[in-house]
Image (cartoon, rainbow, N blue to C red; front, top):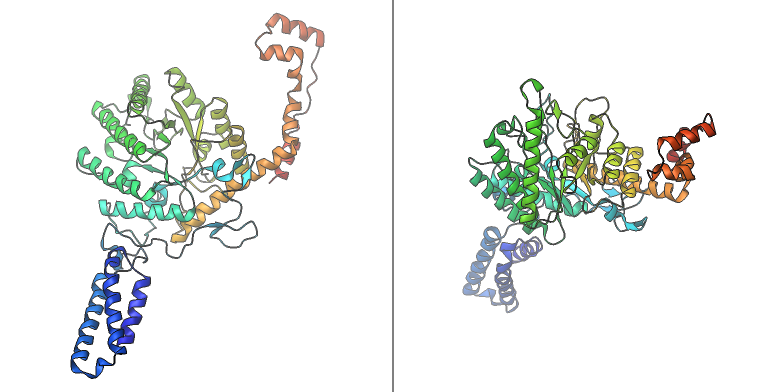
Amino acid sequence: MLAMSLAVFSFRRSHTSPIWVPFQGIQKLLSLTCLHLFGWKLLKTMEAKRLLLLLHCLYVISSLVIASPQTCPADLSTKCADSGEWEGEFFPGIPTIKYEGPTSKNPLSFKWYNAQEEILGKKMKDWMRFSVAFWHTFRGSGADPFGSATKNWPWEDGTNSLAMAKRRMRANFEFINKLGVDLWCFHDRDIAPDAETLEETNKNLDEVVALAKKLQGTKIHPLWGTAQLFLHPRYMHGAATSSEVGVYAYAAAQVKKAMEATHYLGGENYVFWGGREGYQTLLNTDMERELDHMARFLEAAVAYKKKIGFNGTLLIEPKPQEPTKHQYDWDAATSANFLRKYGLIDEFKLNIECNHATLSGHSCHHELETARINGLLGNIDANTGDPQVGWDTDQFLTDISEATMVMLSVVRNGGLAPGGFNFDAKLRRESTDVEDLFIAHISGMDTLARGLRNVAKLIEDGSLTDLVRKRYQSFDTEIGTKIEAGKADFEMLEKKAMEWGEPKVPSAKQELAEMIFQSAL
């Protein structure tokens, strides 16, 4: 019996929880007393036997009642799940993800992303600034327009309670730490539940944000935060562009609170995605008035940002449609035009989402370049779509060619900081294992890292840059320089055209450009 007690003590001590620590001294004293009794051969007396039995009972009671395991699966069937303040492990079978190189066959390792490796003068982690999207990773259910949820993570209890929100937040930071990134993104209503009143809802958000602040420590912080102004029925006509002034005011209050939360958590950016800022038909829509209202809303956001001392960048995320027929921030060019018209061009940048780019009829590379040359490239939502599916599928980017073109724009931009790459991407409906969350992010990170390595090859080779330079070399002449400086009028150009005669037009060498590009992949 004594040997069994000591064995149990040894096991319990190696699997302790915080509540157990104060009682370790007591257990040690009990065990030592037992050993001393045994050593002094006092067990021959009835008094000693009674004393040993009493000590053993006290030890067993303390082991079973006081102690609880700190590391346990995040499964609702375990005692660890009884409290919203769960201290258990959500991904017990997943190690910290490490770089193992291109030859590794381990799916839970990086093959191309080596955070500390320097490429083109910066560490890879500084080029990328990867971020985890809370909504897809921890609120994604696998539902689509034609089917219900398919995912039932072991820590979920089927509610949207405050206790469940805290549990998800703990899972979020365990995931971030094991993945090895230090940025995350959130919508206010994804991390904390709505309540009956705005005051109660704000209290819920305050509680969850306080926990997030504690869990993220000094290393982790949000890449950006935002307010969810599209899901609730009150926003069916829009938020800043709603026809109802009460909705406009409610949306303003929600953004105010979400911006405060982002600032408190050390967020570097704040995003506006106008999912319902648009129209279904112009027959019942005053477009001019709605655009004016949206501008006034954004002006108020700028003023409040400055008032609270939030130094983060304000970002607008373009999207052409879905859920509305036409959204006012259709693409990068439309958004830039809106910002210029209303004098907001110096207050905002753009958050380009690759899948949104393709829905607007552009490539992601086109949207990134449009934002970049306008000085508006602030952040990238790293995802892609399926050309055979007509909606925003939010898939993880795995196309090496597309990733290389994305990184061409990022390198030309000198990086994205204080922006980064947010994985606004979700698992496929049919992917239902917890480890799939890690595999998807690893694949996305490796794909973009491979794109960066390819850009380094292209720059080192120089052939593509030289091809582009030669294509425009006629503008490096005296007359070309005058044109680009705005010093060539029509009379001067007419005289040159008559002097030169019919111009000779050289080949664009598109196939050669594509060959050079492909050789780097």
